[in-house]
Amino acid sequence: MMNAPLSAVGQKPERGDKQRLRLWIRLLRTTRIVEGELRERLKREFDTTLPRFDVMSALYRRPEGMLMSDLSRFLLVSNGNVTGIVDRLVSDGFVMRTKKEGDKRTSVVRLTPAGVALFEKMAAAHERWITELLGSIETAEVHRLSEMLRAFRSNWEIDH
Amino acid sequence: MMNAPLSAVGQKPERGDKQRLRLWIRLLRTTRIVEGELRERLKREFDTTLPRFDVMSALYRRPEGMLMSDLSRFLLVSNGNVTGIVDRLVSDGFVMRTKKEGDKRTSVVRLTPAGVALFEKMAAAHERWITELLGSIETAEVHRLSEMLRAFRSNWEIDH
DNA sequence: GCCTGATATTTTAGGCTTGAAATATATCGC
DNA sequence: GCGATATATTTCAAGCCTAAAATATCAGGC
Image (cartoon, rainbow over the protein chains, first blue to last red):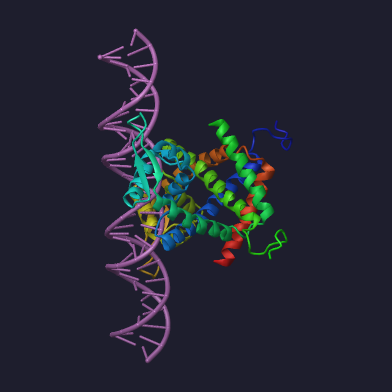
């Protein structure tokens, strides 16, 4: 006998499940829209790519340099991936690898002066673009949204 | 003479600007974390990729089939990209191209029965994973967050 | 019919991305 | 010191991704 509509536990999916799926789809779409727009503008205005911008952004915050593995961990991409992007940035003169320290395996990566100068220009444009692209979100909501995502990330990092 | 702290207009960036930049970074990180997790699981459990899943998901919702350009528009990726993914799905027997209609340029793409069967299995797992991965977000917040993103997308589509 | 411009798709070159294998170096136990 | 294990990075193969060029077809104007 199943007395049906009495606070079913584990019988049917929670009401929130479909909502989470919907949220994920919207999160993904929002990110793709903005990312696509940024990619186009970086290409048009600075003849560069989002991954290059990301690497330079990470290095800008650490004038003392980063290891390849730090970059990889920070950007959430694989080691091999970073190698290629940094290779191209080095051959364009925006990034340098130095092999000091006692450890001969590691290479410390940092921006060259040309890299710093270029990044500062790009960062200013990037901030304007974000302000424009996310401009339709109310400032009060920006804050709430941002806090929710921060909380998500905190929880994630505790579990992983 | 600049009488400083009097509702400056256009003098310094709005307070909300940095907040929007921060929001964007968090949006991007959240998406990357979840996307990475989904990619790994799709690979491990079904030996497939996220782009393939996305294409199959789009086709599942349209048993009557879609044009290549519909797929490309819906998934927010380039035409050429879709060609490659569909090619591989076709050679694996999960998708078929049919060339009917009067228009000899178009090709209607749809899932094969094997594709439908596979997708249904993957979709069930996918939904469980999302429920788990976004589980730390309160159900009430899921709803608000989701609505904010829907509103963002509506605004975007009006302007573009 | 034929030309012109628009539409649907594929091809191409170059860069991004991953996971796994390969290299090189470091560290620890003994 | 030596061997085993761990760490840092690069290389590799395969797939994803874009923008732009190339193909093919369609739809109108004449």
